[in-house]
Length: 391
Figure (tube, rainbow, N blue to C red):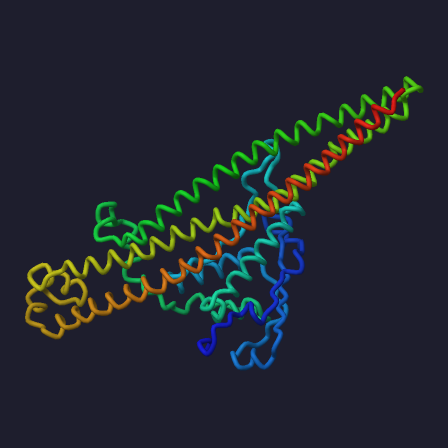
């Protein structure tokens, strides 16, 4: 599939939405009684464009959350230089009700996760490279076997994916690229800041809920008082109803606020994507340093014997093996250089999108708080008028 003829992304021509989250019953042998499937609908605005791109059968698809996880892992393995968009959380976190139990089948949570998965798909489709990935296009279409797990990826990290796990801190920091060190530092700071915001917000939301629910008791007391004293009954009863409205409004308001917090949680998850992004660089950098540090003396001979199955003496005599080793270093340098160029370009695009998204989150939060405060102010004005009407 050729997508290099223009800079347009899939999202420029495709409207991707998850129209429904459908609750279905599991088999009798399953530990969970129900599971959720997500109905994905994709509409292409130009059949001519789709045919030119070789895109077919993008209409309806039914996927479970585990399918989204498989897609995410596939993209991460195949495109290590891309900051892969994160998935929404599978279980609720930073819950403001400390006594509540995380219920993955809760309708409000399922709908928020539906919105998060839709955002995940749209972010992929907005990327000029992974948006045209063959498995992603099949994921959106009417394909059951949309990913071939046995098919090897073009994964330039395969030589060091096990080595990186055992690499100690001193080796990892040697000859490191300051640009990626800066990304790692920023990612850690962003993660810490968002964690603090979400933690503090959960505590404040619980306090606000408890305070507002007190007005339910006030409303009950006012209603009882209205039945006792007929002279002030109507005014007190109205005030009691307004008190009830304060208590009844808090849960929907916090649920609306939770939608905004989910957007922050997405960027909390993005920090994990950045950590993986930097680790991918560390892996390639480590591999390149190891090759560069090998000399053509005894150490090189020992490495050659391990790489190509020769004895140390045979490796020294075999110029073809030495040439193969030098070619391996050239290939590693090319892979590393290509990775750095691609990854830094992707990171710049991520930064631009991140700045725009975080600004919008802040604007949405301010608009929500303003609206909620205005509504609350009007309610208290109504209560004051009711009390002042008592002669």
